Length: 201
Image 1 (cartoon, rainbow, N blue to C red):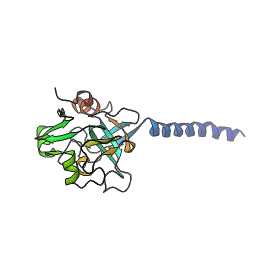
Image 2: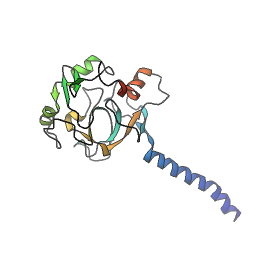
Image 3: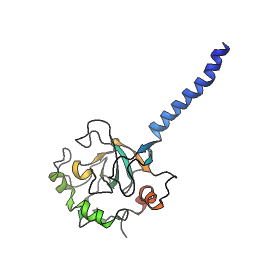
């Protein structure tokens, strides 16, 4: 009996700890590893970040989402990390390296000028939906209700909404935040706080 009590004395705390960890991961936040160069220069390959599940999604927020069912080339759960450019109801246009959301010029100071011009191209939602044969929302002129338009910061290599369309809200796992361990304040701000300065002055 004494041995049984001793076993339970350490088994129960371990079980409680595991349950708490699962609840935190499911409902609050989780650790995410960035895979690939599509978010350079602000997030690098293999960088560890947090994904907060309850955070509000803004224009300019960086999010992690499950690309299965979003990108037609993905057939298993695969996390993509991208920046939200437009929210439901928004129009989006790219011209000469500038992004215009609802006719207002977006602030893109989080990337270099060559990334804006060489990587983004000239398009509207309608033109890229036809050009890239979107499976869903072909011919759309606005971001549909409950969905988001996302781009990678490193536009020339990013596989994003330009090619396969919008990201449904139920596919978004959370809003990305760079942790306290990051020593680069500019890159950290470009991920954590940039949504506060989304439109150009």
